[in-house]
Amino acid sequence: MWTPDEVASLCYDHFNKLPKRGKPEVGREWTLLAAVLQLTHSPENKSVHKQIVSLGTGTKCIGKSVMSVKGDILNDSHAEVIARRGCVRYLTDQLYKAVSGQSSAVFCPGTEKGRWMVKPFVSFIFFTSQTPCGDASIFPMNFSQTQPCKSVKETQHDEQERRGLKRPAESDLEERPRIKARDGRLVEQKVNKASSKSNEISKDDLHRTGAKCVPEGPTDPLQPGLLYHNVGLLRLKPGRGDSTLSLSCSDKIARWGVLGFQGALLSHYLQKPIYFSAVVVGKCPYSHEAMERALNTRCAHVTDLPPGFSVRPPELLQSDLEFTYNHTHTESKHTNTQGKISPCGAAISWCAVSHQPLDVTANGYKQGVTKKVLGTPQARSLISKVELFHSFLKLVAVTPQLQCPESLRGESELRTYWDYKQAAGPYQQAWTQLQLQAFPLWCRSPRDLLLFH
Image (cartoon, rainbow, N blue to C red; front, top):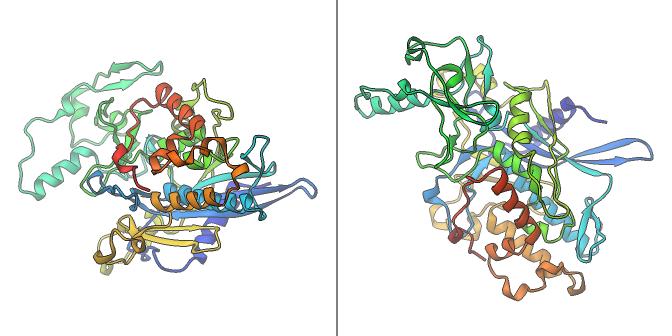
């Protein structure tokens, strides 16, 4: 019915047809791409209609010190997150059509009053051009491959040299790291002193992730070679100097495999969560074992979920087609006159809605806005929390009173974004079980950042 290469090709072609705005400069900038494909099966002629309903690019996050209490800034602009948020915008639009009596390509009435279901022959695939950051990116590399990430020790040393500081006399590389054994225990790993010198290159090395372990949990040993990282851990994405509260893409995709990718707000209207049937990765350094561990195994044991919710691990596949704006291709096209290669500062969101499908941002706000309009609606991304919330409120407003979901019938008591999210009872119950059983150290946004309306 479909192949990983077909999925990748559709995504790349769609990106190429978008306007130039927000795209990387060839040979100087690189980016990552992610997308959501909707599959509509036709049992009569045994065909499948494939449609890209959301596409995103981006590589950056904002630091926690600049997060907004208005919900008007994109905290996480990694491609996977942009694509998922664009898909939520698309699903909200499709629910609006269904509720207001128009034709929806996705939803049909459910068996419960006020609830809707995905049509029987509709499913969704998630595509990403690169292995998701975080745990899925940690796996042994071939000796012929170059290490894409500097070690934390090298980065710290470079920074100290830049500032004119001396390197510390003693390095914690000499400490014995604690690594995770197969049975889950943390055990001491003996290190040969001769191989622990920071200026030696180990024959065996890991593909590393820039995402850092969450606070108050196990940390990375940062030893040479295969002992650099621990695996299976929650991680935070690095920010631009300031630390972030954004969990890695590996962690977020794993979460979607239990809670669905529709989010808390749309859960009010849905009889069941919406899960991805497959995750397809473009041609890049890849390990099926690491993907399985990061996206599926960590949540496989979660039980006691409310009705409708379940552990739904997606099928994991890889394409042989490479994204031409990735780091490798950018390096191959780079010329000495172009300066240093860097990640593209813009993030593109496109989704299959009739009104303003394209949304280009930089530093969490619409690209090109002046400081004068920051904090106003003109500066907001259409997939920011507050804009998605306002779209949801429009959906609630057109819902006939008799068709209103039970969880929204005390609507007069619901005012803020936080209120509406917390009122999605089954979703919050499932989230509680997931945290208790799999992700107890998940970093959540402070409540005062979610009290906008």
